[in-house]
Length: 100
Image (cartoon, rainbow, N blue to C red):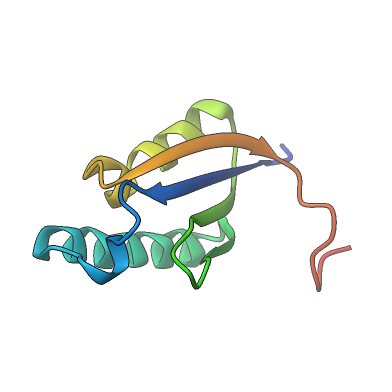
Protein backbone atom coordinates (compact mmCIF):
# COMPACT_ATOMS: atom_id res chain seq x y z
CA UNK A 1 0.00 0.00 0.00
CA UNK A 2 1.34 3.41 -0.96
CA UNK A 3 1.74 5.71 1.98
CA UNK A 4 0.10 9.12 2.07
CA UNK A 5 1.93 12.34 2.85
CA UNK A 6 0.98 14.92 5.44
CA UNK A 7 2.29 18.16 6.85
CA UNK A 8 1.73 19.74 10.18
CA UNK A 9 2.66 23.31 10.76
CA UNK A 10 2.90 24.93 14.12
CA UNK A 11 3.25 28.49 15.27
CA UNK A 12 4.30 29.58 18.75
CA UNK A 13 1.46 31.03 20.79
CA UNK A 14 3.45 34.21 21.44
CA UNK A 15 5.84 36.28 19.31
CA UNK A 16 8.73 36.22 21.79
CA UNK A 17 8.50 32.44 22.29
CA UNK A 18 12.12 31.66 21.39
CA UNK A 19 13.47 34.41 23.62
CA UNK A 20 11.28 33.58 26.63
CA UNK A 21 11.03 29.78 26.74
CA UNK A 22 10.03 28.43 30.14
CA UNK A 23 11.63 25.24 31.48
CA UNK A 24 8.47 23.32 30.58
CA UNK A 25 8.49 24.72 27.04
CA UNK A 26 12.19 23.87 26.65
CA UNK A 27 11.44 20.32 27.77
CA UNK A 28 8.55 20.04 25.29
CA UNK A 29 10.74 21.37 22.47
CA UNK A 30 13.51 18.91 23.34
CA UNK A 31 10.98 16.08 23.39
CA UNK A 32 9.66 17.30 20.01
CA UNK A 33 13.17 17.03 18.51
CA UNK A 34 13.50 13.50 19.89
CA UNK A 35 10.04 12.65 18.54
CA UNK A 36 11.08 13.82 15.06
CA UNK A 37 14.30 11.79 15.36
CA UNK A 38 12.14 8.75 16.11
CA UNK A 39 9.93 9.40 13.08
CA UNK A 40 13.09 9.70 10.99
CA UNK A 41 14.48 6.42 12.34
CA UNK A 42 11.16 4.71 11.45
CA UNK A 43 11.36 6.07 7.90
CA UNK A 44 8.21 8.18 8.29
CA UNK A 45 9.78 11.65 8.41
CA UNK A 46 10.40 13.30 5.04
CA UNK A 47 11.45 16.73 6.32
CA UNK A 48 11.22 18.88 9.40
CA UNK A 49 12.40 22.37 10.11
CA UNK A 50 11.60 25.81 11.37
CA UNK A 51 11.84 29.37 10.19
CA UNK A 52 14.94 30.93 11.69
CA UNK A 53 12.90 33.94 12.78
CA UNK A 54 10.60 31.68 14.81
CA UNK A 55 7.54 32.29 12.61
CA UNK A 56 6.59 28.62 12.34
CA UNK A 57 7.85 25.06 12.17
CA UNK A 58 6.74 22.18 10.01
CA UNK A 59 6.94 18.42 9.82
CA UNK A 60 6.36 16.56 6.53
CA UNK A 61 5.83 12.84 6.97
CA UNK A 62 4.32 9.64 5.58
CA UNK A 63 1.51 7.61 7.12
CA UNK A 64 -0.72 4.74 6.05
CA UNK A 65 -3.97 6.65 6.63
CA UNK A 66 -5.43 9.93 7.84
CA UNK A 67 -6.10 8.26 11.19
CA UNK A 68 -2.45 7.22 11.50
CA UNK A 69 -1.36 10.74 10.53
CA UNK A 70 -3.64 12.24 13.18
CA UNK A 71 -2.10 9.94 15.81
CA UNK A 72 1.41 11.03 14.80
CA UNK A 73 0.36 14.68 14.94
CA UNK A 74 -1.48 14.39 18.26
CA UNK A 75 1.44 12.57 19.89
CA UNK A 76 3.99 15.28 19.13
CA UNK A 77 5.11 16.69 22.50
CA UNK A 78 4.61 20.33 21.42
CA UNK A 79 1.01 19.53 20.45
CA UNK A 80 0.42 17.64 23.71
CA UNK A 81 1.94 20.51 25.74
CA UNK A 82 -0.30 22.98 23.86
CA UNK A 83 2.56 25.46 23.48
CA UNK A 84 1.90 26.00 19.77
CA UNK A 85 -1.06 26.49 17.46
CA UNK A 86 -0.83 23.50 15.12
CA UNK A 87 -2.61 22.30 11.98
CA UNK A 88 -2.47 18.97 10.17
CA UNK A 89 -3.06 18.80 6.41
CA UNK A 90 -2.80 16.23 3.60
CA UNK A 91 0.29 17.09 1.57
CA UNK A 92 1.99 16.02 -1.63
CA UNK A 93 5.73 16.31 -2.07
CA UNK A 94 6.26 17.25 -5.72
CA UNK A 95 10.04 17.53 -5.88
CA UNK A 96 12.63 16.24 -3.45
CA UNK A 97 16.31 15.69 -4.13
CA UNK A 98 16.99 11.98 -4.39
CA UNK A 99 13.32 11.16 -4.96
CA UNK A 100 11.95 11.31 -8.49
